[in-house]
Image (cartoon, rainbow, N blue to C red):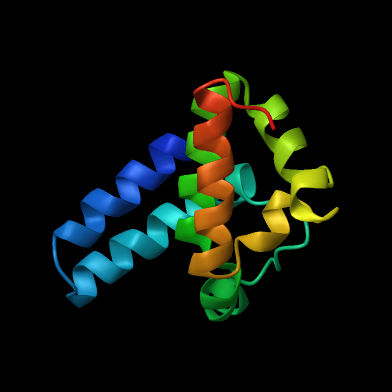
Length: 122
């Protein structure tokens, strides 16, 4: 299965809107099990229980959102991933992907992507 980050993100949003019951949680877990290899970099544990415990740390939804925006802007998943993983002078040499662990860092990366989308490369 090869899902685009934007498709995964939209599927998870749709499931989340359906509520918080055990059936919905099970469906979200099933979706994540089926897709996590395609959307997350290597290093994610094979055990889904361990993956589930690390989801809060990994901020999967936030990462999917940014990957989706980057893919739209760069037009190619590999180019988007390359930009996210490359140290950026505008971020004092940090990689954009490293900033996705909290809302503030994510907002900075989102703003950079919006600037690129509007042709502002400074």
